[in-house]
Length: 160
Image (cartoon, rainbow, N blue to C red):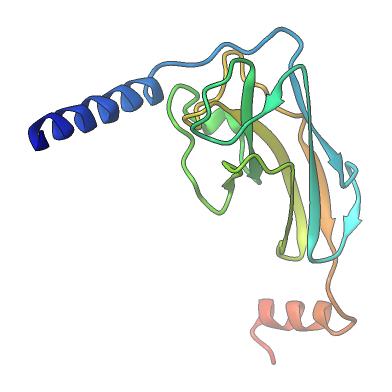
């Protein structure tokens, strides 16, 4: 019985690996991800709340196999042309996974200008074919207090 369970576990693992490497779920025509807020060009303060939108598909947690669904990944200062679209998206500080099916996040971003974009992934974190991706928006995160710009400038030039 133990041997059967080991073989079954290996088969499941190999099957999910095969799906995550090279298999892309089809996206329905017209499906679109978008960022509801903040608005493109907005100046925001920390913590920043980013609200996700999706039309033409549904949101489902990672690992949930339901046709025409996926979950969001937030690309922060990441050019999607640098991503492998036929494998699972890596989880990094710049590629943030929302495998629980979340539709918004509140997080700290460093002061400065950032480019944000959403990319939908399937049950295995693999982008759909074609990719369901939002337009990029740019937001500027302001300094938290009036002395922060001076501290930032002083740190850049090595002063205290």
